Image (cartoon, rainbow, N blue to C red):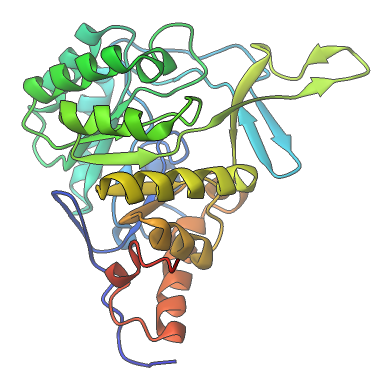
Length: 307
């Protein structure tokens, strides 16, 4: 174990982050919700919940269900819409000095393009995360990720509409993740987010009904970590591209595993619902892991998995 300071800074494609620990979209609101519990400036980046052109009330309840190793959600992209986000949410967030990545979602290519155009006019944003993988909406969402032609079209169109770097969030609910990832990169993605939630279901056996009104929802938390690690590893091995890894990260050692598999940074998601301070704690624990293992710079871990 070394007492020397660990260099926790990382380069994720065009994004220079002071820490590899970020927060996953849809789990951290717009940052302000966690400000009383978390030192937001200690995070590598803040990724907002999904933003759409018009306000969305989301799906009817019940839309969250705890599982034995995580949670199911069917929120349905609830958000106040782009106008309110630009006017009310982003000014305070960008003033923190932490890279801000805005997650965008649409039902058509045109909606994504308009969101990118308007957000490109906001001073201080670090990147856009193009959400083409939400399993909890009827239109858009996974439709774009499941069809590589549609994926290429939306990513290329958003790339042409903004100067901001693009992070593309991919779904695990596809056959082979590698060609999907390659398509996103070829179309203009600078970074990939891996992975979004798996489709899952919970049933009330006594009532003989689904626990969620929509029937299925997105499964997140420790249950999906092995799947997420495998997908990060497969994409890294094949494409050697910048990846933000996520899926069941609860501890600093979990984060280290994603880095070893090939991620340049990680995102803490469901853990924040268990403990609002989780993202900061994971960062501290990752620092401690590096000291214990004699790692001088956390970036050394990326892709360092031994055969």
